Length: 132
Image 1 (tube, rainbow, N blue to C red):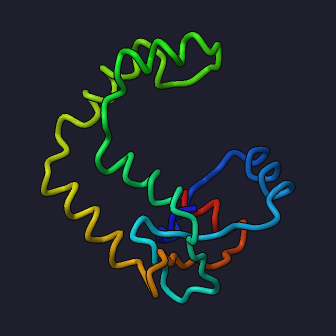
Image 2: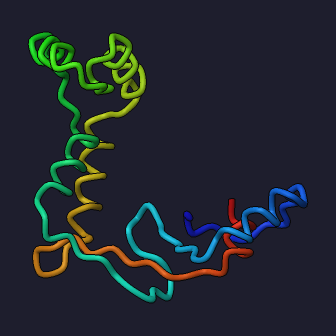
């Protein structure tokens, strides 16, 4: 649940009741990686997590050969979908090099002792529903 201010949201009664019947825990996070008054942190010690971040910050187009191999495998992979590459280009058209550099700088600031460290805190499920 993104750390947002609570609002006076009127959910339909059955939706709210159903959600509260099932929600046990709600956790607040921020896109910046750090919440106010954190209760716990998670540190990344696996290089795959940063590789995945880089795939979003600096996406590389998938080659036709790779797409063909994915299609041959029979696995359902979004990158093999014919609409994937054009959609990615469309989504990234306004993302400048400056924006990408800023994202990398912000990610670098999350490092403590060389490990990306993000903070979170627990919030009440009923409060979480007011932050949607």
